[in-house]
Length: 187
Image 1 (cartoon, rainbow, N blue to C red):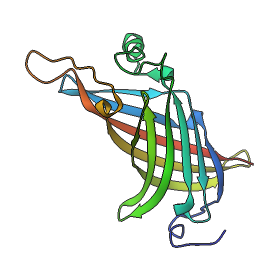
Image 2: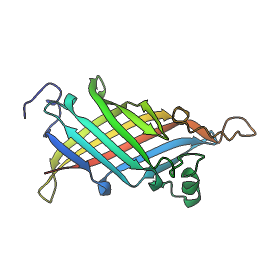
Image 3: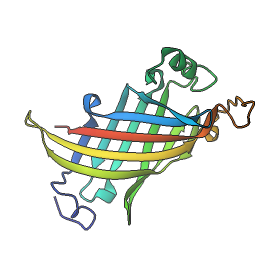
Image 4: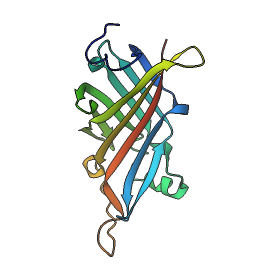
């Protein structure tokens, strides 16, 4: 591996293809509820592949998330989220992300990419923290990444609005997304 300005600040950086370990990763979300609190959830079934290039700027990410795996800790709410009111998993079973580029900022890294949700594709940048690279106890190599993004659900055709008597809506438009990925180097 050549040491480039983009990788020099990342100890133990390794080039390769990585797969998210679902036992040590999480794809989570939160959204305002009743304008006073946040409802939180996660997706439990997904496939995330990360390719780290000789230069981190040449890296890529592809992710497919099974929307039926939504888990908010409330089965009734989860069932409602799967309906046409929200995710419509019968028609749109997955949410897909494909990176289009990586750039460095003063605060870290941004992965630019396209998110397809509910049949709509939009540009969604992910703010990424590279947590590190290192060996695991089974003789393999692991890499850790944290990422955040925000989307407006209406931009993806998820338009349900339940007005509140006191003003506002039951579910906010902005969805915050958080990823904690521990990935395994593929051989």
